[in-house]
Image (tube, rainbow, N blue to C red; front, side, top):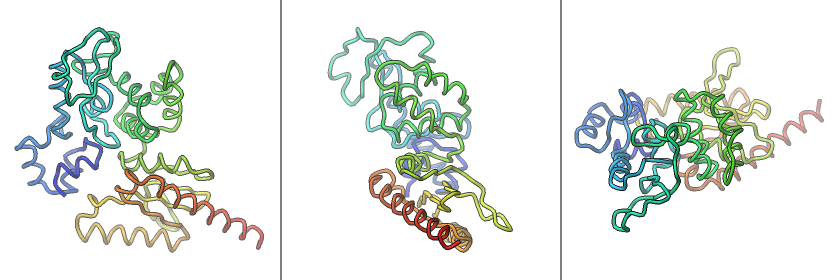
Length: 294
């Protein structure tokens, strides 16, 4: 895959090191040189399409907001938005041709809601959690926590939320976890959280007599390992062999290993949910049988 494709699958923002691991140093440098990707901070790159939001915000005398602002702040999103998001004051009514290709939101923002050309981190997080799906919101919230947004600040924001979407903000805030490694993993956990009886915790270190590995998601009670399998991390045979050995270690120590592709998690979440429900049923029945036999 190209650097742009890989970056899109990484949630629109990634570190230079992660992009090089998934592609190559030469490919990343070439994408940067031709403007396909841009540097949003030292060692952190975003899709060039993120710049469209800055241009649109200037053109409309608004501010970059929602998922576009999340990317602007260096946070990952579940899927990069098709159109840049820009928030305008309620009284502004630019001509239709100037709004073309832009997702326009109208609300009067306070001085603390804006930093430069974009909504503030707290306002951005609130907007993403309030208006997006649960999976979309969880991806942004996990990324914000991973990037240093204080958990207490998120809890306070959820506690004080009012109006439409406030219940959604509180739900996402209660589930957000900065241990999630990336947006792909967060989106998979969003599906897992819909499954009754499943408690999927990110990045749990598993050990037997030796260290087995640190899977993406683990339910220790049921003995289930859930992995977000991305082609970007299996770009060579060495990576594939390393993960195969890792999965085998889990399996021989009694763990049920489930592996899901990026395409299924992003575009077929119902199918993923059905598999997870079947796994919970199988492992629950197994525990009951073992308990009866004992």
